[in-house]
Length: 222
Image (tube, rainbow, N blue to C red; front, side, top):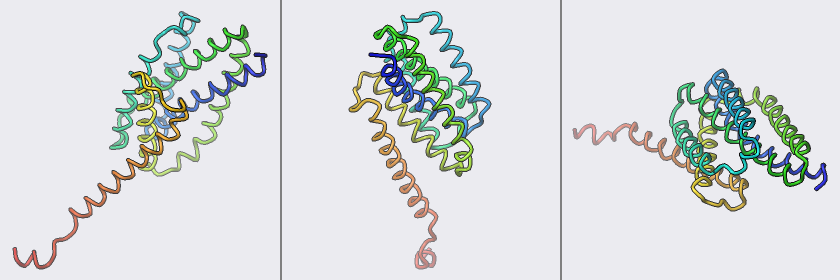
């Protein structure tokens, strides 16, 4: 594989991971507050850099499924909580930290694996950096429009995304093989959204039935 195909391959693979991390960061920042979110991102990047510098190529032999299982399970729990109500800013920090750290490790795995196999680590790094920069700039561009979305709708979207990602990673960590790999999220997210919408409709109808006034005949009879 020459340099250009290697760069493009790593770019696409890392872009997928970067988009997943961006989704979690945007969710935490838009629905809570950005200071805690940025602290979570910053600490995650420091930890990621330290781990990469200390272990290096040995990262490729670490059991990533364990991290996916733990992080996926926690994200699913936080996502379900977010569907119900807002949570504290500590959650913004921890969500951003875990999301960036997990996806960052996967980016490092991709770079080391492709770069080592093709004996061109530099080209792999170029592809990864280009993907992360592009996704980051996209996130900055859409931040302002998303901030105008009503809070309850944003919380619903955040809950759906976190529950979907958490379920996806948790199942992968437990050994499940999703059909189509990451593309399974294109099915999983709408399914979670539909289930959430169904629950909302059911709860609203139940609330309306409880608050409805009693018939006049029942009032007279009582």
